[in-house]
Amino acid sequence: MMFDHETDQPVLVLTEDQAWNLLERTSHGRLATAVGNTVDIFPLNFGLLDRTIYLRTAPGEKLAALTVHDAVAFEADGILSDEAWSVVVHGNAHQLQTSAEIEEARSSGVSPWTPTQKHAWVKIEATSISGRHFLLGAQPEAD
Image (cartoon, rainbow, N blue to C red):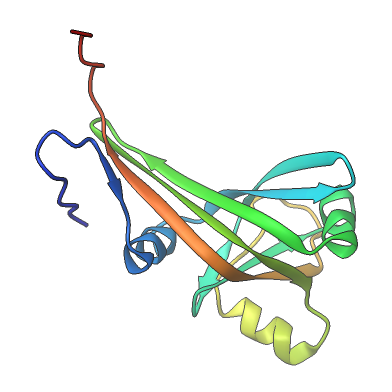
């Protein structure tokens, strides 16, 4: 995917379509939850289907946090030798309950990385998405 930066502008604000296209090309990110005065970040893998993020998890802090407060942030990024990107999704996370919901989630392709039991399925429905593309290089000298 090519990004058109204006001359001498190393940061490009992405369109929604560009941000979703980048998410389609990766399968790892970080989920941020907030409960009370505690904010947590969990690295995870995910699947994407129809602009909905799916993940699998086991009982624990992450699932408990989503049950208490469903507002979440999700971030994924990519870093190459001369460019990088970052996409942030804000949305609501819900544990899937029905076999129809879980079957749809399976078609996203998400599968646990580790050989552990992760029977809980979660989907994140986006309320907003934003992203940036960066051209990497040395910081310019101050005048």
